[in-house]
Image 1 (cartoon, helix red, strand yellow):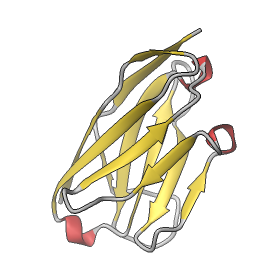
Image 2 (cartoon, one colour; image 1 turned 45 degrees about the vertical axis):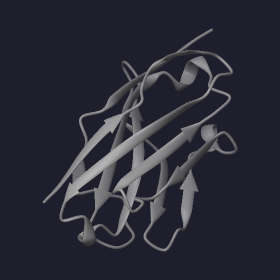
Image 3 (spheres, helix red, strand yellow; image 1 turned 120 degrees about the vertical axis):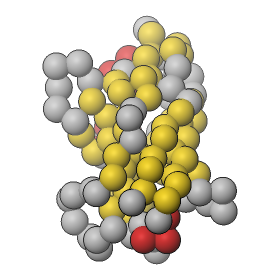
Length: 119
């Protein structure tokens, strides 16, 4: 089992920056890849960014060039660095971890952290 806890969400003005953290505990050695998702009110949850154990990353088009994902470090914490934030980035952000190799599904999820970007 893996437990994930996000933090770092806040209210920020458009153009600002935030760094979200995802602290992992449990069977961290079993994690093969992790990702960040977000869900805005009335919308489906969408993938924001993902990273494999080998360091390969992919980003959703709306955040390319503005967000940077990093995998779990020695302190078992992963990050999503967000810059040039826009009001449309407002959402609850979730980190997720997967045991299996490449694929769309994740096994473990955090509880989410709210990011609100004001115009």
